[in-house]
Length: 532
Image 1 (spheres, rainbow, N blue to C red):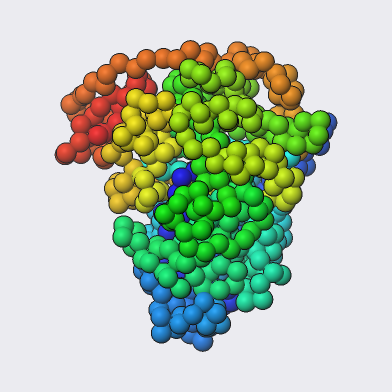
Image 2: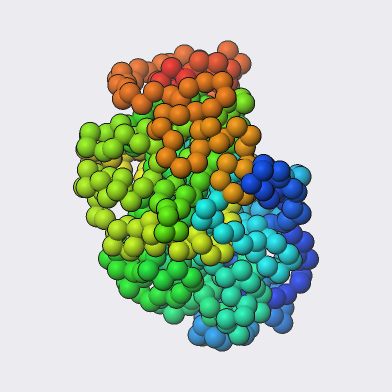
């Protein structure tokens, strides 16, 4: 993850506060998930989701005057962090009408852009709830977490992210007396970027030193940030994906100040208590360009299952993070890294992370912040499940799905996906693909090899790196070369045209093959052509 919070912004007039008002009733959408036993029996759990408080309308306790509009505080109300907390309240959410958040049984659907009668909302961040006032906690160490996902409708520049953070289960309600809202209203967020765009931290408004963003009309950054350990299970669109541990020397939520926070908003990215880069496994970046994507081994045009295992060594420390996929009834082992100098393995271990940082020439803050052993300490405690969709005002999501840094093209580790380096500009994706959405469903949690039948033959401790179970063998790890892109000027027979960055061709494609004026249909591979 590079800059998750610079871009998760609602255009709703309002922001976050720590008191509660009820001009809109707060009703959490229900979401069923399953808890599994070692024998493979899974039982339904009745849960729900809540919306992060950073998206919510915030107004005066005594009326409906905004405390925060656009990307600025009302300083007549918010003269200080404590004064703002005492005068402003967070309100309930119209989940479907304002935020594009809907549930059905075990499925959560997050829409990218939602236009309501009074506002336009961009993205969302939600949390799984145990009760009306408490987040669901997960102890991941020695266990596995599984879910189904449909990323077919999110492409370059978008990120459907499912991950865990070590935030307080009550949203900080007990720790901070100024916080009157708590988990019910989505308070207490933190992560390994130590984000400084959170409007209320520890029950106080982040108004001191607030700087409105230059390129995001709804966001800014303040003096304070909020830090905690983060395990990115899933950051993805239909072009690329990565899973990434981010250890912190301080595991639970803590407040940081100024450049000492590190992360996205600080002059020294590595100055804080957390590792902002993490140790990522992105199959494309690791040399297998045919494993994940449209029409590839894991075919992103269709729903599939993601399994992540957190294995312990004899001392009880986190030793390995393994990944499997299931699609069309077939268990698919993660791709094997195929980069000169890197071990040919398909999982994250400490030695692999150390070598990866060296081969790619990246600063190794992962090891400096304690590596997998320290990450394991967070996984042994309760972590909160986050499910979101967002775009990236910092670097246009190039760190996930394109070449990044752009000036490092051709160097080891720079190529992360097939998206163009000019793609992902938030103003463009918000205007051109507003109906994008991601669906998370069928969440399961339990001991190793408990959530998917047959997984034991391809999971568990140290299987062969190319192992799979059921009906197929894993994809090859051979590095592939890609021919230079060719361009097409064909027009669609249905008279429709694809928008810039949209799909315009590929095997099996039945949509428009002509691009909007100013774009050209460019072949990326046999399965995907894009308007560039």
